[in-house]
Amino acid sequence: MEYSILIHKAKEGGFWSEVPALPGCLSQGETVEEAMANTKEAIGLMISCFREDNREIPVEDEFTVHRGCVDTVAG
Image (cartoon, rainbow, N blue to C red; front, top):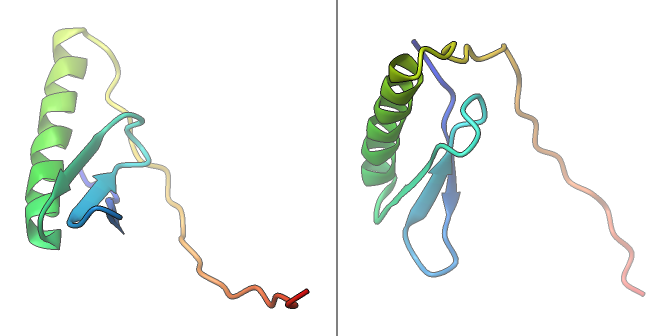
């Protein structure tokens, strides 16, 4: 299974991550690589819990991420 992972820079340093298809699946790390590794582990643990509870494992719907600038006027 493949899941999209969003990595955010943490204000206090390091990085934190989330998996949109698995609400509540969050992790963190000092580097992007560490955050990715920790997140992959968290995904595996979450899927194991779904299996143990005989719950359907969420499948990610296809989605796109867009970034854009918003013009602001200083007031």
